[in-house]
Image 1 (tube, helix red, strand yellow):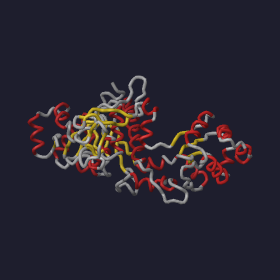
Image 2: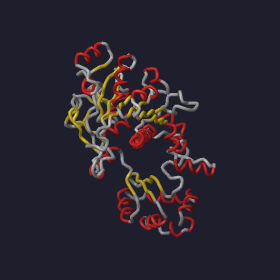
Image 3: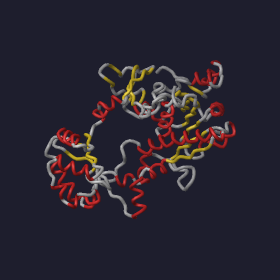
Image 4: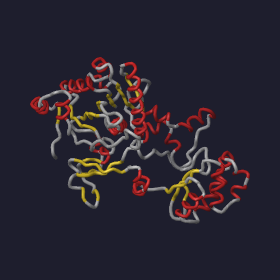
Length: 415
């Protein structure tokens, strides 16, 4: 039994921020009803890579031209998929009836869009005063940008992260994964849990207005705080840290590694481990503030020394000295790390069409009593339409068939 067992979540979100939020809730035991349009969540078509029943084999997975997309599989496990046409009044009524029985609703439509279907918070809170209604938008429901669509990469540009990402002489760079979408999904899950806790006292739901822009700007943390205090803009430093030296990626003779010095004692041990005590004895470098001030003199000297020996030798030397150090892995190396195996970060999940598929595990899977766990495979399009309409709303098979014939709902069909 999961920590959120018995919680019912109505998921009207698509793409990543909302689905990532509801996947976290599903991993923790919530029952998530994923409402999809007839074409499905947009990410079902985002590929390649896709995988199909014919593409799997003992030697691994092959790229297919159609099937389930890797993108969709990454953020929809454990949910129940219902295909409902929200443009049809009968579809709107079905979702309203589901909202009556839900604890939480998550949506990421543009501001005002769901009001056209009678599915906005004002309407649904009348039907279910205890409903926690989470809206995820690019810029929130207030302010001059409230009507604009929001995309992770656009918000990365606006919130400042691209101005400090990349090499000093290079162009602005985005974070390759949808960093703000993912953080918004996590903030969304926190917001839902906070609202549920408050509902346990008041008995009332509420509207949660969450914006990618707000999350992205808040996530600038120490860089933003430094600017607020000094008025000085942070610079792009590549893999270096603006306030700690030495800290970042260094090149060995045969590869890269991360050296993360957190205090002066660790720096002293680095100087011993590389056989250059003079880099500690120099008074300019004996404090972190001094090392930051004299970054341009110290870092090139360290880089020249570290390029002279293989990476594994440096990893062993620094580990023995008690200095935080890791290799710079590609994804294959990261997933093969013994630590990843020990923590269950790669899971095998049965799928009704694809056989057994690999998925990433949840980082919340180490609770002492109610750990998060993958509840089920990412659902096929419309896989649970009939099940939920029968068991939750009490519709008869003949009624569902009639709705499907009219294009109001859709059940999964073998391709």
